[in-house]
Length: 216
Image 1 (cartoon, one colour):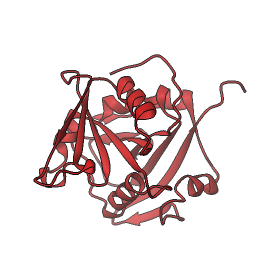
Image 2 (cartoon, one colour):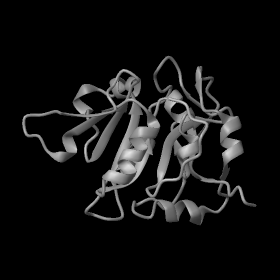
Image 3 (cartoon, rainbow, N blue to C red):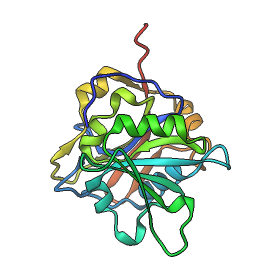
Image 4 (cartoon, rainbow, N blue to C red):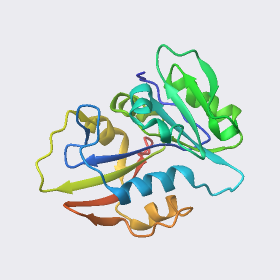
């Protein structure tokens, strides 16, 4: 699921991820080491809401991330769910539920690049493509992405982490916007205008990272 090629797509390709700073830790033993209700709502709103009411977003994830979602919440509603695994066919639909609708379609694909090309060129109803995990999928996607949406988490609690984002690659390809208005504009289709949150023992902020202009 890796790539050394930088490709550009018409539709925004955006990893959305919560990270423990400063190491960009995202998990421990396949699970999130926190349960932040406001951050979970932010994730749902960002990945579900669209600027165009006639469109929807796609969420692209690895098989382990798919299986980590409780069955009663799968597929994530209102979004086209794309599940990646090397053992999958190139592109195959399955449907769930007694009353099958378009939003219940689940797509199985065997590579990030193929899935992104397919969503970008053949799905007029898709507005944005959000990458939602896990670590290998995030770290294999940066060459394809236009932006990153990172929830930067800070806490005095001692948390064990064994899964991290590739900070070297992120620093090479992206820069964090210091202008709050850039993030506000990017999420203007949602109710969010303030990016700093305190929840229990955690302080976190919603941040936008933008692809660097290589011509500079």
